[in-house]
Image (cartoon, rainbow, N blue to C red; front, top):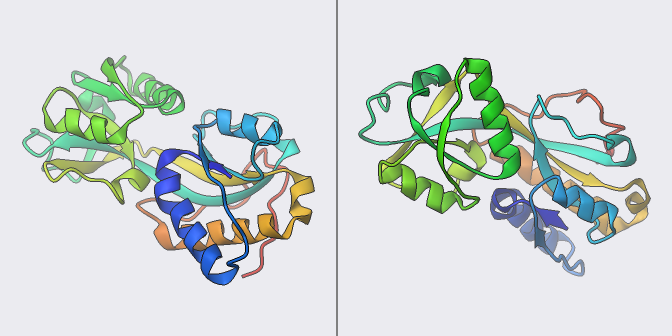
Length: 225
């Protein structure tokens, strides 16, 4: 299977442990990739399942070819050094941060961030770009910029000199597992999808449960409770 790093550290780690405890004969191999590259790997036959994410304003294209299992809606928050003037607020309007220097992440998260800033009426000053969440947090704590970061990351990695706050308007990404319809006949695939769903139900780092009736999705695999 293939997953992006913060999903590998949380959802996938728990699912592999659950699968190993309940079906020890199933072996899992993990590759890491960000979407949409991870979906390309699925189509190319390089994995049987991929865990990816998207944002409401940039839905995946050509989803009719996939079976999709919604896992988690993950709230995006703003991370600040503890001494920041807005650190005492419970929620922060994105427009209040228009004059900040920013640290941006992967291309898909960066694109969403740019869209959110444009919607809030400003163009952000992005001085640093890195996929490494530890580097992002270290740069924030050093006082050289602020960043947006998904709650899933903050659920397992949080610098002690950093605070995270709600963003307004609300921002979140939808996390799902994808497979191809022909792989539904493989018992190990179904077992892994079930494990991913069960573990995701226990996480809920900040956001609500996955929305029902997700548009553009061909269908969701029926997994027993």
